[in-house]
Image (tube, rainbow, N blue to C red; front, side, top):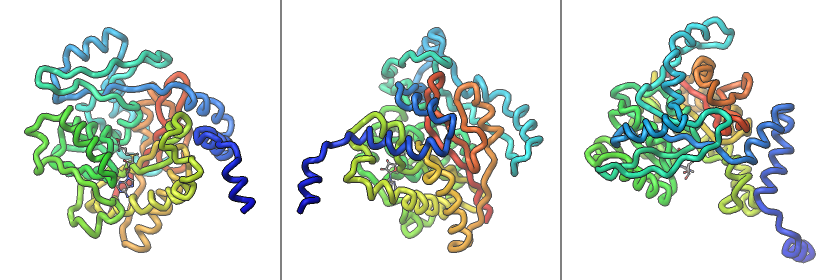
Length: 360
Ligand code: SAM
């Protein structure tokens, strides 16, 4: 009884403060002297990128953005892919897949240190919006997935659809399945598709949208995909520091937060089962937490081998990230995968990405 009274009278600490306390306690240890810089980045205004919609007439929009000093960070830096992949063969990290960049995705950003905001996109004469605003670092998982012409792609946790749209911008996908457990999120995704993709490209044979529990994918669907994106629910670190609403650090959501790594492992395992042998999967989060990033990958790979007889090889992304080091700050030598660190001069991320090849 005393406990109840205490609970009802104690001052409510905003969830954003709880998140900051948690991050200070855990990330300071993990990131050491980098933490103050990452911390101030996450507490400051985030930078956006404009993912261009190749299905809209956007030539004028592009020249306006260029006249404002914006540049497409993918074309600007991706051009040297081959030179950089050759260099990567000299370093001592394992497997050196050449970095391949889908040249059809275009994402414009303002230069380092320039915090100009983008105006909201306007519709073209056909009613399609010219660009989609998102954290430019969230295009990296799609670029790293290396989607090639004719590929079938599964986006297992797709809502609200930023990365789904980036996948479609490759113009290489034969069939895309976009799934999200949340009905409201898939509804947002459908609205996004209507605003950005012509009707003739939205047929059931080209794009399918479902609201299924990704963990049960194997029991429901027999299809195997060339490429699978597993962009899991996580502590959304930047959002958790900024917004009290829907914040996973609320005391009432403690259990949900603590069991996130388990959910992430289950989703990653389901994604691996949906990947054809020889196909590739990209695991990503927007958290700095090693427990939700490399630890999840390590555990899922062990379980995949022991319990499902699935052999997986982690792909080296170091030559890939080097291509984009003028735009993003990457964490120095993470154990597994790559991590974009927020920074005041390039305030994107956090985004963690790890690419996996299903060997058998
Ligand atoms: N990929 C999205 C994008 O780029 O817009 C963001 C995905 S968000 C980080 C994670 C998503 O996972 C949320 O939309 C959430 O509804 C969804 N989710 C949570 N549990 C899930 C489950 N069991 N199966 C499928 N999706 C799930």
